[in-house]
Amino acid sequence: QVQLVESGGGLVQAGGSLRLSCAVSGRTFTSDVMGWFRQAPGKEREFVASIRWGDGSTDYADSVVGRFTISRDNAKNTVYLQMNSLKPDDTAVYYCAARRIISTLYDAWGQGTQVTVSS
Image (cartoon, rainbow, N blue to C red):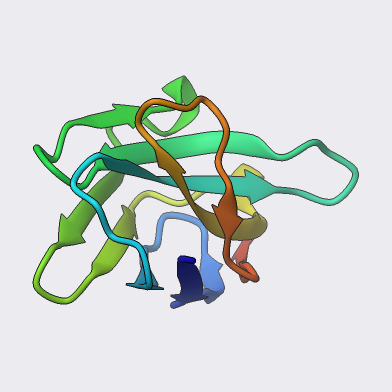
């Protein structure tokens, strides 16, 4: 069973940066995919970015391309989300999640970390 613990959220002004971390314990197979999602008040949860443990291939939502970067440190079993040029619309609870590459469903989730971007 995989456990995910996010950290790094906080309050930042528009244009600023934050780096989120997701510490992973339990299952960490090279075939796993790690994802970041976010949910703003009154909105549905949405995909932000993902990365494959094995080869590091990444995918991003159009809204964050060029501003956010997902990465992983295999030795530390940690996934990061570097967020630059933050906008008030990026305000949300950010969640780390994991899935097997053979599945489309993320079956493990962290507790979330709040990111608030002030204008």
